Length: 484
Image 1: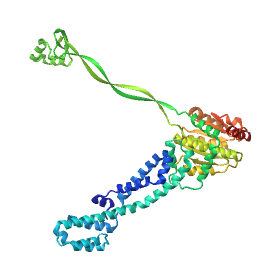
Image 2 (image 1 turned 45 degrees about the horizontal axis):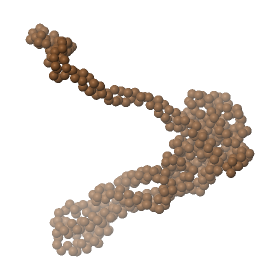
Image 3 (image 1 turned 60 degrees about the horizontal axis):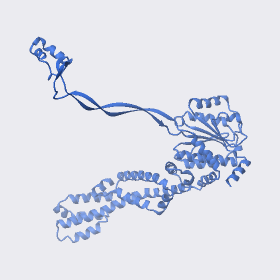
Image 4 (image 1 turned 90 degrees about the vertical axis):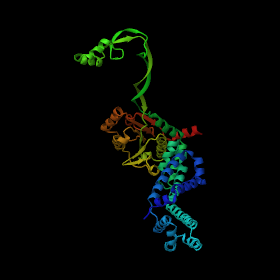
């Protein structure tokens, strides 16, 4: 069976033109045009993905096989082209019969044309084959479009879902082109669900708590990217002036030793005429010890040389990821719970904008894991925000697991953030020792976001920095009064 690519090649049909027409119609769609006008930062990410889809679809079309009927008809067409006039008209009736058996769309037209063939000449043959080629091209183009249709409808469906997700989440999850691209990637394969309303609600709640947002921004900026000194060797050309004997010197200035045969003294030439001394002449020549005239008249010439220059380049490393541990005990319920979730959402925005990973650990009596910046980050974020806070506080187990996480290569330069009211049991000395070791030897930083003024000071001593956001009723009223 013949491949679709082979027939396209012989008929000079370009499947890329068909795909381009579809993409032009897609970009011209009012829904998409309005979306990109409103959210221009997402367009680059969208263009990149559409380009990948186009290449994937072209590969699929090239590997597709055509139906037997089209393949057989095309074989018949090739045989007719290669036939001379005599053989073509001799087989014309047989060709018509085969076209009828193949249910070819060209059969009716071919039958009418053959009925007018009073003069079996080259003009009739050329017209017949031209019309046949035209019908074959239409069949192959239609086949291409039918093969594309399934993928095209799937693409449109996915785009509609993702446009809805990005439209809803863009106001508080997109700060720059990098985070917009990340948001677009995160929504890949996601279905738009009413659960996205959870993200939207917490985004609105975060907007109503500017001090919480400010706290997250301060914490995000507090990590200064580390820098390393790197040796960078470059080669550069430089010019120097060198003195050389002139080609036409002015006068004799003296005698000196060299290998210049042209200015050699006659006494040295004598050595060549004596067999016993000939070897001595060659020795003097190689060692540049021949007596030669030293002539006046040197010239200066510019010479280009190359030298290596080593420079120390200060190179900044990218910022590390976030590991955020959130206390989900019963004492963190209510307003504390809302603030903790909104704070994590703010850190997610920062992580996306700075191209940093964001990993969430929920701890109470058990530990639950979420990676908010993974390819399934939207569903992970929804699951996290839907989690209810209840149970006890097992801070030690969470910190122990965090230390193990820091030993992994992907998280070796992570910042650790603990969000809790810190009403918990005392930490084991062995765990405190491990944390201090991470802080001193590996420069890991442990942040505490304290959501209560009743947290135990002894627990918070181990942290590099304690960020306070009092969620008590008095502070809440003061913040609301200042905002008003």
